[in-house]
Image (cartoon, rainbow, N blue to C red; front, side, top):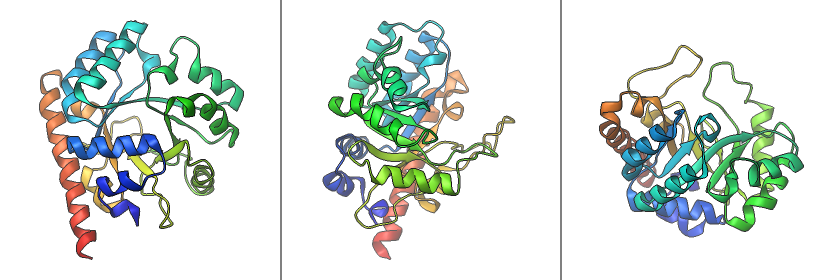
Amino acid sequence: MNTYKSYTERAKQHPNACARSLFELMERKQSNLSVAVDVTTKKELIAIADAVGPFVCVLKTHIDIVEDFDMDLVQQLESLAKKHDFLIFEDRKFADIGNTVKHQYANGVYKIASWSHITNAHTVPGEGIIKGLAEVGLPLGRGLLLLAEMSSKGALTKGSYTTESVEMARRNKDFVFGFIAQHQMNQFDDEDFVVMSPGVGLDVKGDGLGQQYRTPREVIVESGGDIIIVGRGIYGNPDQVEAQAKRYRQAGWDAYLERLSIHQSA
C-alpha cells in the first residue's frame, strides 16, 4: 500500500502536482509537521511563521481571524514560504455550492487561490463544490483536501459521510490529493491520498472545548496519517515556539521512520 512507502517513492509516482511538490519538500526538509497558526494579529502570524518555518512542511492559516489583514501580510507569508521552503494551507473549509465557492476562493478580500498552495472543503454540498474550486485552483497548480474526519468530540464526519467523501476524491484526483482525517484513506494499490491529521499533542489530551489530542506516533504509525497538524502545543508558550517546533518535527519524523522500518521488514 502506498501509505507505507517512503515520501520519495510516493512523490515519484503521484498523479497530482501539488502532492508531488509536498512529498518532495517533506523528504528534503525531513519534516511531516504542519503548524496551525490560529492567531488574530498580523504581527503574531508573521513572527510565528518565521520561527517555525525551518521545521515545517506546511504552514496552516485561518486568514479570516486576522483582525488587521491586508495584502502585505500575504506578501510576507509568500516571502517566508520561499525563505523557509514550506507550502501554505489556508484552512478555509469551503462549504457552499460550486458557483459561490468559486468566487470565495478567487475573489473577495482574501483572494485565497492567489497565494495558498492548499485549501480544503466540506463535501456536504455535493461534488459541485469540488468542480467550482477546481475551475479556479487547477490552472494555478493548487491542491484540495476534503474534510473526511475531524478531531473534535461528537463530530458528524464519520460513517457514510466519510465513505462518500472518499468516493468524491477518487473521481477528482486531478485536484483532490488528500484528506483532513484521523486515519489513512487508501484502500486500493493504485491510490495515494495524503492524510493531514489535526489534534496532535505531546503533553495534553484535550482542551475543554471538545478537541481531542493524539501523539505523533499514534497518528503516523498506528493510524497511517502522513502529516501531523499542531497548533497551541507549539506556539502556546511564546518563549518556546522554536524549541517546540523542533520537538514536534523530530517526533513526527521519528514516527515516520518507525513506520517505514515496520513495513519494509514485514
